[in-house]
Amino acid sequence: MATEQTDDRTYRVVRNDEDQYSIWWAERDLPAGWAAEGTEGSREQCLARINEVWTDMRPRSLRERMDADAA
Image 1: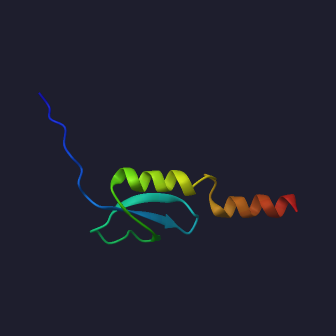
Image 2: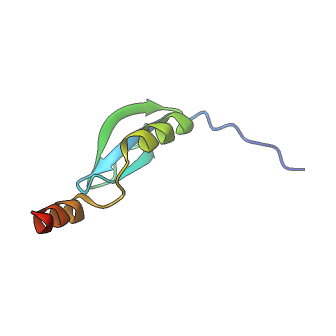
């Protein structure tokens, strides 16, 4: 019988240059191209923050190109 494991690690919300979000373990160095967004906490807290702020899934370069084409 499998037992449920508790994830008590601290995560941080990270964002890349295209304004795409992810979570990363707080105790690890950030991967190249990603910067800390400022939120740290449980996995659930970080995912909730991403859900709150990442409302447009398009990469920033695509949004800018589409805005320029619309102007």
